Length: 118
Image (cartoon, rainbow, N blue to C red; front, side, top):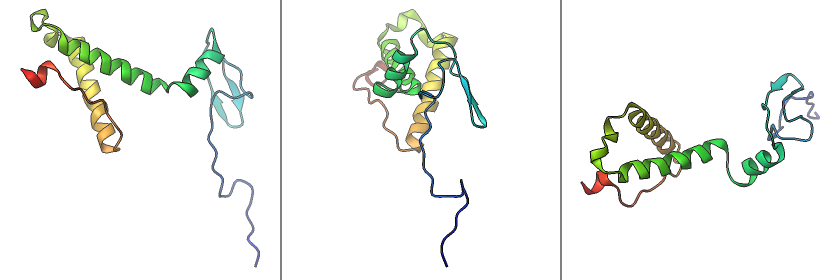
């Protein structure tokens, strides 16, 4: 008996990128899915950065890691450990590290910080 499959019924693997030639830079209706990309002064640059450099998550993660290194190297006399924004940042980055560990994703290895040397 021959195998019969209806359209959209299986064995279809497709990556969907919101940055395609079919969509405008401010969003478009594509099938049943509505994707709004927002306004960008240079959508081509944004698309190239996302595809060639890294996703927003990767970019923000590296910025967060760099901020944490700077914070850890600041003199304790500045009192940054008591600042609510610093506390929230550290908690958020700790949660991200836990999730990365759970998914066996690489995390930044800091060689030398105040916390490990104090």
